[in-house]
Length: 317
Image (cartoon, rainbow, N blue to C red; front, side, top):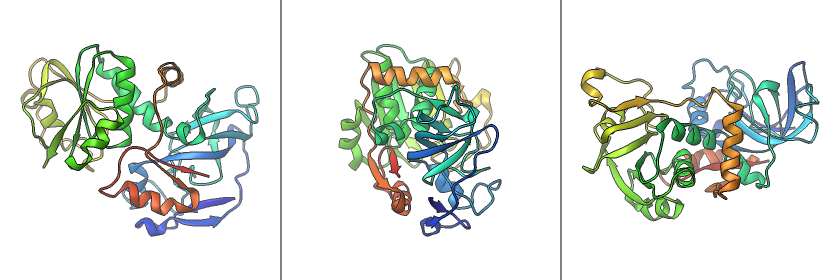
């Protein structure tokens, strides 16, 4: 099969196309013919060598959509079944989705029934599940003011679309470091756009909920922009800072506001089914912003890491 094999950490140039042996099925695992996969910032971090637990050579890729090719669970995962898979250390502890086939533990594979195209379906698993789970934790309500910090990201764009499906008369505001992307953000489903400059929001407005996708670097600033009873969900790490620095909760968290988080690695199959139900029922537009072919994975990584990046990037086999 064809696969993108990373022999050693480095820049996009280490993403090289190889002919490798198709994985052999083993007990408790199922072989998926990968039709598409989203590309994620965490994969760029791993490619760069910023994931100390990952050993090379490695086929990266933390999510995939496709069909069951060979199975060890014919009842739940019959051959030909459309499936999604994400997280569970795929592409890290074992080879992931940057290949025509991927061998995945059965418990990490989820059957789906959908009419979405492969490109649209590939935009959903990690991105959609993260956005959906975080929005549930934020307890968004009708007429609320929701801020998405990191609005141009794949999760940010997906969150705006899902939020409007989940609540009525909800105002969803995006942050961006580049106001030249304002029209793109409004076209993607946001209602307003504000500038995020040097880690500080350039507004005095306060919000009922803030989906914090930049991460620890900007959490303290986000907390200062909550209404009484408001919630910040520290869900992303786009800022490249993993831990809160010199964070004293009593001082940094305003009284009667809340700080929570959502981790997509703990997959609840019922929540995943509900996500697809919401997408189907409300006809949520989940189209990716950019689609590449497997042999162009290097270009996909370059685009995602660039200042021009916007929304979800998908690579089809």
